[in-house]
Length: 396
Ligand code: FEO
Image 1 (cartoon, rainbow, N blue to C red):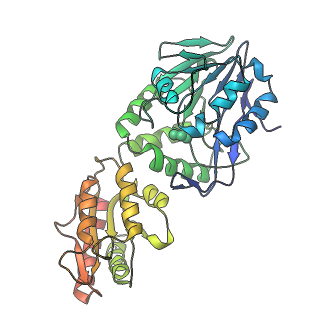
Image 2: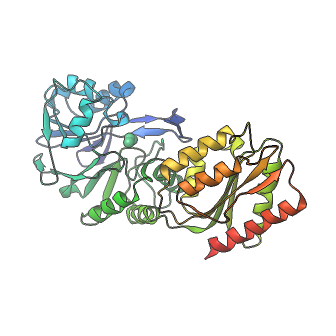
Image 3: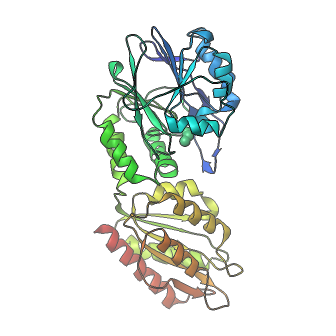
C-alpha cells in the first residue's frame, strides 16, 4: 500500500518525488513530496491534490481506501499547480465530488483550468463542513504564499492541514518527524526562505490565528507531518517572520581572476577574530537556494563581484535578483559591497551596493570597497577592517 494512515481514518495519499532537483529555480537537494490527505467519515473528503503528472498515483492511493465515486469533497487549500495540477483529472474521475475552496481560490483556479464543469462550494472562516464525526473548518492565510491560500482544520482530531506553510521540500519514506530531526528542520528553514519569506507581516498574523487552535498534528503539503516539533517549528517561523538575526556574517561573491576572492578572504579574516559565525560562498560552487537560506539569520552581509563588461557577474546578478524578491525590506541587516574592476570609473561593485540598498539593508559605508585589478596590501587591510566592523555589528 502506498497510502499511510496518519490518524484513525485519515490517510496520506500524495506522491513522493525523489528525483526533483529544481522546483522553479529552488534547488531541492532532498527531493520533495506533494501531500494529499483523505478523510473517511460518513462523508469522504480529500485535502489537496498533487502535480499533474502524478494524478494517477494519487487516484491509485485513494482507491486503496475508498471507491473513487465515494469521494464527496475535494478541498483546495492553494491553487498553485503543484497542489492543484491533478484537480481536472481527479474531478473527472471522482465524479460525485464537490470542490471546496474560498472565493479567491475559485477565481484563481478558473484562470488555470477549464472549471466550467466543476461543482464548487465556496467556504469562508465561518463555514463548518460536517463529515459526520469530524468537521472541516477553514482559515484564510492570504499571501502565505498566494492570495487564495488557506488552511483546513479538524478540531475533533486537533489536526491542521497547513498547505505550504511548515512544508519542506523533503522526500522521505517516513511520514512523521522525530523528536530530533535535523534534516527536516533544515529543509523547513530552506523552504521558508525560498517560498514563504517575502510576506512576514502576513506570516505573523497567521501564527496569531494558529495560536487560537488546539493542534496536535500539522500536515503540510510538502514533506513530513509534524507531531514532535510543533512548538519548535512555530517558534522558528515567529523568529524568521521578524528577521531575527544571529551573530553571523554571510559573505558571497563571484570572481574572475581571484581579485574579488582575495577581498572576500580578507573580509573573512577580519571578522574571524571575533568568533562569530561566518559563512562564505563562492557562487561558482553554490546556488541561490543556499544563499537565501543563509541570509535569513545573518546580521551582516558582504557581497562581491568583479566587473564584467561594465556589469555584475551573471551568477551574482541572478542571486541578488532572487534574494531581493524574497528578503523583506525590514530586515535590519548591515551590508557591504566589494569587488574588482579593470578600467572605467565605476565598477560593478556600485551596482551591488545599490542592489543591497534596494533590499532594505543598511550600508556599512557610503561607497563599496573597490580594487583596480589585483588588490594591494592597503585594499586588503581595508577589507579586513570592514570584516571586523561587520563582525562587531553582528555581535550587538
Ligand atoms: Fe507547494 Fe505554493 O505550492
